[in-house]
Amino acid sequence: MTEITNELIYEVLKRMQDRLTSLDRKVDEVKAELVAIRGHVVQLASQDARLERIDRPQDLIEPAPLS
Picture 1 (cartoon, rainbow, N blue to C red):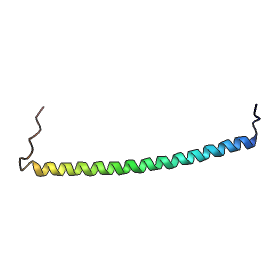
Picture 2 (picture 1 turned 90 degrees about the vertical axis):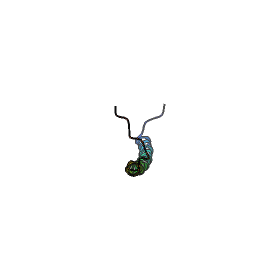
Picture 3 (picture 1 turned 120 degrees about the vertical axis):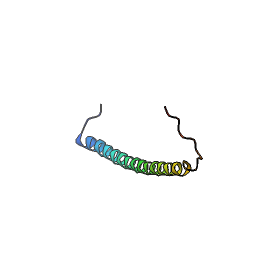
Picture 4 (picture 1 turned 135 degrees about the vertical axis):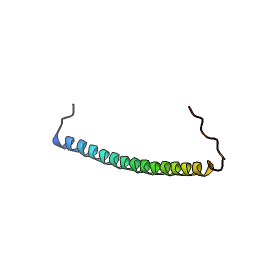
């Protein structure tokens, strides 16, 4: 059985730290992508609302049925 030494523990902790740093970077990338996607969705929703306001007075779309 391998003897557990301070050096072994130190090496394992260094590898864990490297992996956590890599994971942090990847999480930051995902956050940035989500912010970009959110911005695009807001922009598309704004354009959709604008098109509805343009189309409605011209009777180009049917009004939504009342439920």
